[in-house]
Image (cartoon, rainbow, N blue to C red; front, side):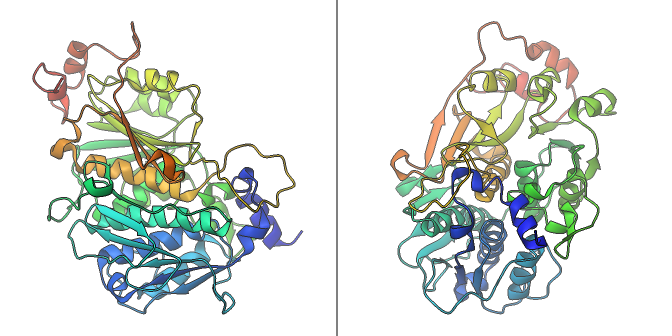
Length: 454
């Protein structure tokens, strides 16, 4: 077996789980950018994120990107936008072919340029359409550019395998769609300030995506990223902050040292990496965090985090049918343990989803799920958008479970629900106990009678 075959055999095994193997993955696709997108920070964020996600699935990509000064942080060293895109694609996949045949191929067009699928952004909103969609100069365009990249990468994969792409407009401002999908207030998004100490538990697919998006706006306070796992090659097909070299595949040869997930994710935002499992960290932590983002699944972490007694947690997951799920766990919301206990019939993973295809070449048995980078990317961005709106209505909304669907158009883009704990739940301390435990911390006031709207 050649190194190329070994690389794709391991990296893409979760992608192939839904029945599409080498044929569709080997077919060339393209990403094209208009001058408006290439010259604006929001457009550059959308372009680089699209390259990031598409390169984790497709093996032959034609990049048609104007050579512009780089205006946003890059995951790889680069001096221009075009160089950042090309170097990033090769760092994700050392065997990727960037010179596709000069023929018509499925093309994701960002901004005012020609293509098969068009993506644009305006503040917190993004649109995937049949005709060119502009990228505006809205100061909050980071969010629209990011979610536009996720929707565009999903639509491009659907088109590449013979399924219909989904055209829609969504907004992360208030989590709306269609005519209600507004750009949001015209103000810049500064460094995220949600606590003096914030703990991200789990640096896998969604945790990595959270840090990937956060590096564009920065964070205030101290952040800790807790995870004891090392990066495996198959993790790189869905972890937006992970490169092939992080899994030991430097230069396309499996001879390097594997990096710790916590180290790589923490480096994106200047956080403190903690190479521990949650229960090990919780037993020795010197200071209680103001906010906890639980993105781990193993060692009973979902039950354990509730016992910590924090007044607020925000987190995300992905599920089958191409869903990215955002959760809020406040004083009157369902706790993490009850949340997942009530969802036993929903298969939650790091980044999974079913893909209906008209062109399956798989000879393996299908597992009914697949790891997809745009799902973890969308889930991570939902967390960042929610944290950015803690003072702008997110805490007042009765909806504590929001789902963004990137696949089936018939079900709509968003599904919002309200859920409380199971009767007799004892998975977290009483409010009076939580108030004593968290006295002096950022969100302690939420446990007071007037601190959380009914």
